[in-house]
Amino acid sequence: MTDSSVSSGLKPVPRPGVMDAPIYVPGTHIDESGGDVAILSANENPAGASPMAVDAAGEAAKGLHRYPDGGSVALRQALGELHGLDPDRIICGAGSDELITFLIRAYAGPGDEVLYSQHGFAMYKITALTVGATPVAAPETDLRTDVDAILSMVSPATKLVFIANPNNPTGSYLSRDEVAKLARDLPGNVILVLDAAYAEYVSRNDYGAGEDLVDQYPNVVMLRTFSKIYGLASLRLGWGYGQPDVIGAMNRLRSPFNVNVPAQLAGLAAVRDQAFVEKSRTDNERWLGWMTAQLTELGLHVPPSVGNFVLAGFADEETANRASAFLEGRGIVPRKVGGYGLPTYLRITVGLERECRMLVDGLKAFLSEESGS
Ligand SMILES: *Cc1c(COP(=O)(O)O)cnc(C)c1O
Image (cartoon, rainbow, N blue to C red):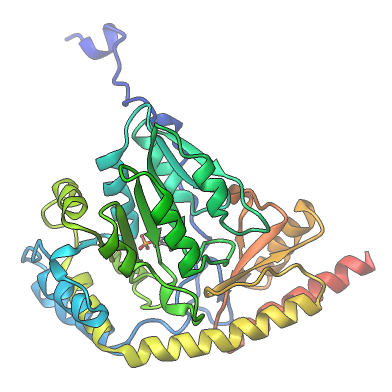
């Protein structure tokens, strides 16, 4: 018997761009069953999820043989009620990552440009590459998204602009007015994606997640997630809000049962437990402030953050890498952000009080060892 696929020398070749895309490197996780560790690498909610959401996910285990409601109807209804939005203009996804993929697949291909901010969330670039589109990064000023820089880089090939607001990993945010200017000045054929994964954490009067801009402009989409303040990262659940044409395009790329039953039921229970969200927000605010002050006092550069994480800047890349290894040796896991063009920084999630104290003690020990050597 001959093996024709081998003898012919033919082999399958992925579409242009696929093999150019780097594989996303997630924050490190370590075994936490043993106790005194602090996983501060993935911006997860250190308090877990609402007990009601945990119960709902458990209940869902009784029906694992049934397909989900493909339209996530009850969940979209609850989200619509909570945020005052039309559920028909909401789409649910397996994490907001999946919704980013739908948007890029729907609107970009070879020859098109996908524009984002210099230190913007990694998935915009990675996903653009997978469809053969050209990723374009606009420079930032002081680790902040620069609306004028973005506008100046829009070309006839630009199909989508992605803004994480607040941005990960910098923690900075754009005001409602700055985002409104971007929405107003972008050409109407360019999709503006407002990725508001950390919106619930922000308590600034001049911040908005962008629902109002979606209502005003047919090319604006807002993305949200259950992975951060809701503490449901493992279930993979996110949602988007846009005008009917955009949501219609995304729904055509959605597989029929993209959001599983445990995710839908836990998401629904989580939406109904806003007390949990509120407590997570106030706890974060307290320990974010504390961590920022402590790390700054240690001489590290900590840009102001409105999220549930901070950047901590060291003298140079080698010192940042040594700090990361030192902390990991003590069971404290930060996130390296060299991949985001920030090799002298580590990103650190705001943990529980115990974890924040472990982190600060760890960095104190590291810095005194460094100055002694
Ligand atoms: C964490 C994060 C997401 C959320 O991803 P999921 O796929 O919903 O878990 C989206 N955007 C940004 C900027 C993030 O930091």
